[in-house]
Image (cartoon, rainbow over all chains, first blue to last red; front, side, top):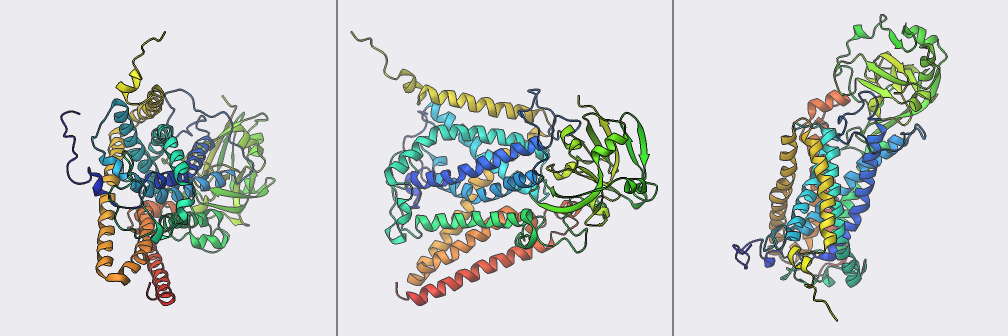
Length: 426
Length: 157
């Protein structure tokens, strides 16, 4: 510390370098206060999604088991209401998208802190700065890995799910410490300047916050070119705009047209099978000869049997209106017709509670197999669907047969089903 | 009788109260746990690089870059006199909104994930560039309209 000159070098290390008259504790506090609920919603719905995958069953865990030997979940993900995963996961993606403009504005407002002089003042200050590196890196990392995932862009070597999940732990831990140190600062700023009072000033009446020692407020403010409310309205408009553009692909209907930059906005073609696809038959290597008349569903439980599609269609069928909800935040509700999974379990000779491991004709891929919980199998609305909206499933939607489970993540609704194995829960 | 306690000895040496240190230790414990989990999985080095890269990309690339753009816009508007000064926000605001859409959706807009997206959805990334340009054009058109209205209602502010 003593090796460094006490006077900061020229450039951003000097406070006169930072001239925006809007920066200061009040602005940072307002942005932080707006950001916090979005981050909390995003975090809670993210952990909810982890629970919805029943990672303790079969090969469901994409991240692999944690070294703690347990997952921090104390409840079974429900099948009611059937739109629960569509709801929580849309909320996850939309709150995440809406947070990005506020996050970037928050980082802008705090930027002078990166160039504090002297760079380290005390052990506490050093640890604070280290935690800020985790906070800034963690926030950008978690939000942008999420944003890249919904666009199917994977320019890195790690597994998205593990990195996004464990990156969130790092980010949230650093955020917790940030709250401990900054909530008093925010409360003080609101006490001194009011929560909304500074928003009353137009550009002509906007004055800089006092450039006190240790704050981001400018010591030599430049001319005011936009009011605080103008800046916040711009950021809020960006946030709302991104949320609306995301909302269309969850709500569907005419709103889907509004999601013109989102992965499943707009139309997915006409007819009973004209709704969004996750993984095409071609991409999954589903050749027509694998799904033709010689296709059989293999069931195993107390006994083994094979059923042709005709045999399945001759069983008592149920029709349910259920959503497919993707982890990427889009969803679509359709009318599915098929055999209840509970009925198939009975045919396989299982009369008690049972979990089901469903395998696809698809080889490889993270989700060519999924294990459903006993609650999911027992729900009479969980189907091996053969038809959708009154027509046979199209190849892209899983012909000859696919699973549809209320409230489950889309990738657990296995397409191109080859076999279902029922067993008692371990 | 008073005992002499070194006043705030801990605070003097550490720089904050003990509660701060406890919070730091709790934070490092959680973050450390997560990093150990990451180290156990494929490509931990890639994770570390992308995590550090996120800081560099924001603090040392994106921030200086958009600050420079803002400075150029501010300079140009000031040089254009009174009208220029009034026009500044009518340029900055749509530029910020268009920029936000770009920063979030650039993998689609630039077609970086065209193959994986087509495999997933059966769709092409081709339309996204045009849609973003149309959004940008609409934002600037609305802004220009508002600017014209503003000049008309209050010509010599």
